[in-house]
Amino acid sequence: MLRPCCYRGPRLERPAFTITELLVVLALIVFIMTILSQAFVEGIETFRQLKGAGDMPEELRAAVIQLRGDVEEANRRAAEMIAVGLSTGRVDPATVCDLKERYRAIHAEASALDSPLRVVLERTTNPVAWRIMQASLKALAGVRDSAARAEEVLDLIKSDGM
Image (cartoon, rainbow, N blue to C red; front, side):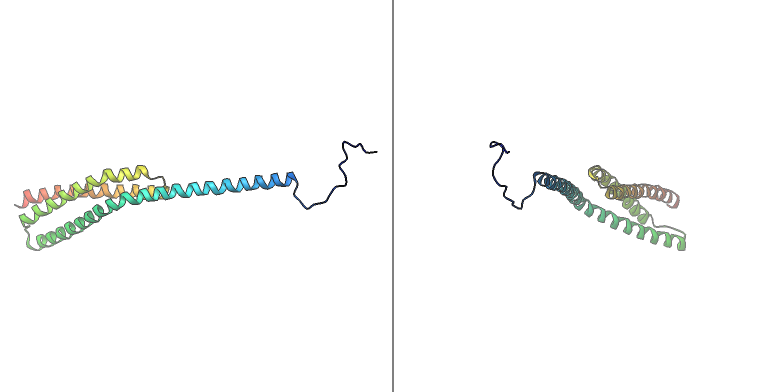
């Protein structure tokens, strides 16, 4: 016999989810949302880094383009001076002084670019961008050192050939 306090009448069959099924679905949704939110956070962080890396290099890009042009022009003039010097056996003192000033300016420009590039390097967390910045700084140091050596050689030419 059924007790009256426990019997609630005939059970109505309705299509529904059990509480266990709902909890499993909720856990899966939370798991998927966690993954999506982490991906979103990483995307925002990457965008922030790229924007920060993009803003400062815009200012540096003009200086680098100017430096590259100065180096190309100085190297072209140095090649001309060398060709004339080899064919005539003498160098023009005005050309030597001009080249020395150009290489001194290149050395100064390269030195001035070093600090801002290091700031960009410190802000960079992307490993690929970081390696590119490291290579850029290394190349800049090479330009700076080469310009200093060119000045020394031109000093020797000036003192020897004049």
